Image (tube, rainbow, N blue to C red; front, top):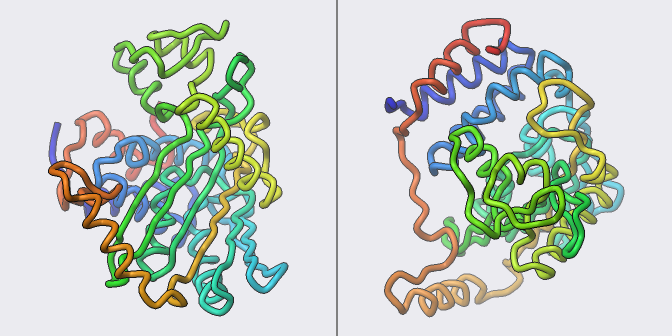
Length: 331
């Protein structure tokens, strides 16, 4: 293990993406997202994905030269066609427009269509909250979740994220999680490490509980809270696919597969301007104080701390250096 600064991580990631076919804007936006993920210790959404990004740029599974197209089918409904490119630059194209619409009408929606995986959904809702608006985000993914009582994969881990401003330029709440008991990346990381997974995370191909990550990857993940989590996952699916015109989870190929059809995923954001409520900030701060009365209790996201230097495995760091230096991804 070695320690590296966020500047080093962002610079090498951007260089790797540029080497493999991303234009400057796309490379910069994705590298920034990787930087933020690593700064908060979110390894699954950070450097863990960079090799996959590079492989898929070269195979054409993600278009590195796509120019997002922004439209407004209705005054408070903003649509961005990512053109089978990365989600990060597509969101950046639509963010100012949806914020303007929310401030004008009180609330607005942002639909990002035909995009590569957005990886960390909360990364996007946080940006909206930092601009002073409440954000609720939804996305879908490749199929890995069966309906309660079933064994056929229907939806993905389908994350939901909430970000709430505190009225003083900061965040009152930051919540981002999959609608499954655990993120798929934790299963794949357990498989790579040769370790078992806790019971209750996944089912095997026959619909039986398993602690074997390989059996889990052949089976399905469990919705958090059973039917309750399944309902949230379905709603994320309806908004992310139905409101963007992107693929249903069942038709999306594995996200890290080097070749194949584009992800063609959607993200859907509800953006609310709280400024019409004169005491919004005070109410949220009062709620946060009530939550934190007991030692150890907190609002979601309140104890997140970023760091300027992070620990990276030697293998991942050497891989990143190779990707930044070579025109071909490592095997």
